[in-house]
Image 1 (cartoon, one colour):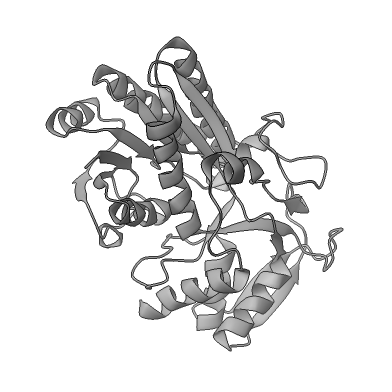
Image 2 (cartoon, rainbow, N blue to C red; image 1 turned 90 degrees about the vertical axis):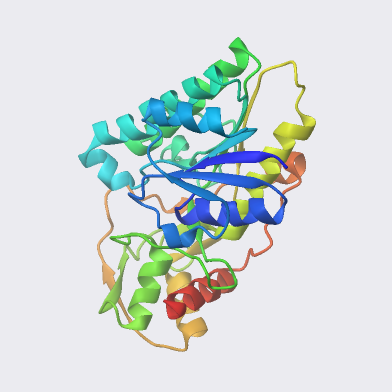
Length: 329
């Protein structure tokens, strides 16, 4: 049985990936400082409280456990916060990952799947689905810190036999269909849980920022992907590194993840009303600066090379599963 170190494994996507790893016969060691994660979200594996910036702790983990690979989620993710506190993002996301990579090299662990972001592309000029070959022009420190990590992984692959895959995606959504684990952020900033808070009465309404975009219903279109599909993609990427990458050579590649279908803000709201059976107020507000009308990631490369396909591409399923988790809580 292979053992996988999962920094950030108590977070939203990390906890679902830990469950998927267990289902595929892997043992997980979860390292989390619980700044964004929750112990109760970890259903499998051994949990260690700590930080990727703690070199002594990483040495202890790699010494005491026979780690075969790393799936790395430990990062600050709020783009707006990164503009206000950029150095904290560079410290945690970039310097923290540098520390992790140095420890991996020291202990001869050469395989890593990195949870990156489609924010590395910045704000595209064309309303076309994003492909991996586009220029990397992040518009905030969050995207820049993720791209800096990808550059480190790319350069390591040239210099030695280090093997890595970066996965880029936009909006994780939904929850485990069992309702055991799901999305928990304080404060919440993601659209689907905010909409469901409006449905549950936790907030008075939901705001639509901009209803005059050049889209079919005037609201922004975004790429949403079910968290269980993200989890399966991370496992697929890990197995690709184990089984299909030449052991004597370095390797780095990046893959977009998405459904290929975008959903508008208004579609999310109307679907949530349908799923929950609850009407709630949606308030039209002015556009927010810097919000593109259309952001979708083309995932055909992951489909073809990793053999990954979304199991839950329907918006209705994402909202239904998220709603079940919210009701369970």
